Image 1 (spheres, rainbow, N blue to C red):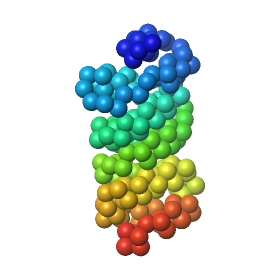
Image 2 (image 1 turned 180 degrees about the horizontal axis):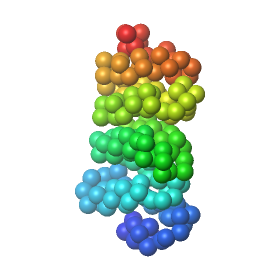
Image 3 (image 1 turned 90 degrees about the horizontal axis):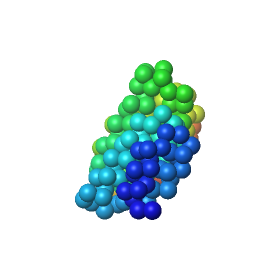
Image 4 (image 1 turned 120 degrees about the vertical axis):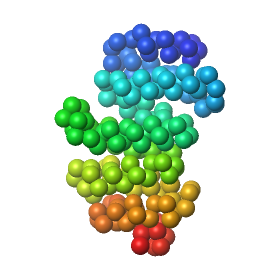
Length: 178
């Protein structure tokens, strides 16, 4: 089955478990053009799905794209998952947040810094929340690729959390966390 057939099946299917199986089976498209636009449209719809497994797989797929559009989508999703509305309406907002932040680790874009820093400041449980550890790892990836000066303030926030995020900041140059 080609990508268009998978997309049609995803649109047609109403059962969450089946939609999850379909989204996992859709071949990744990393090129540009019409095929990439179709793929991103399906991934965008999967992010709005009512099934957490479908949404989590969509986060992973966005992370695999490793482009600026993926960075923008993941930043928007992270911001959304930190909102009071998400805490009221979603069954597992922290699980979804962890998946979105984990996907962001693969997209070392400066466009994610603000959202990742917000995770460090607002995720429930602080240093004991896996989302803060993943956010710190993502920030370190951004610093390695784009320069430590961009992530310094955010890494200082991670360092102040203590625990695992603080230990992770030890891999950054000392100048990055001052």
